Amino acid sequence: MSRTHVTCTINGDEVEFLCEDDTTLLNALRDEVGLTGSKEGCGTGDCGACSVIMDGALTCACLVFAPEAEGATVVTVEGIADGNKLHPLQQTFLEGAALQCGVCTPGFLVAAKALLDENPHPTETEVRYALAGNLCRCTGYDKIIRAVLAAADYNGSEG
Figure 1 (spheres, one colour):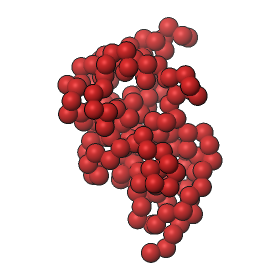
Figure 2 (cartoon, one colour; figure 1 turned 120 degrees about the vertical axis):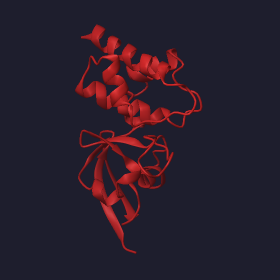
Figure 3 (tube, helix red, strand yellow; figure 1 turned 90 degrees about the vertical axis):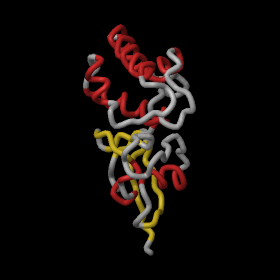
Figure 4 (spheres, rainbow, N blue to C red; figure 1 turned 180 degrees about the vertical axis):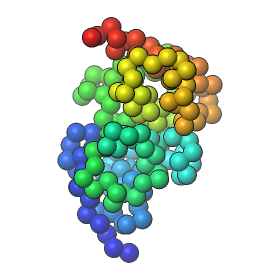
């Protein structure tokens, strides 16, 4: 199998890596780039644990071949914080205990960021709809929804 050279922007930095043509973006992020925040929960795009924002769209990285990221802009969970300053979503997830085992947390954070980037003041129904592609077996979702709404309130109080 041939190896492909991929150049893209990940979390604001230009990144280059080599990968097999059938390598998923998820595996390239984890194994070639060293960004292990995105998790493989199902490998079929059903759980959302591997969610990234690719060219502005919420994307399951397990469903994208890494060579498809050529020239793309990708944001992973590692790119949400501003240096050592947590993103409001990360802060409200911590404060609201919106995580347990942590496997789904990166996907929820990325999906919630994609939502708040598009809709800074969502209703509870809009949050539930936006996060419907993310599965959690531990929390029961209520704390996650509350954390996203709290982050939206936090964003509203800044501007």
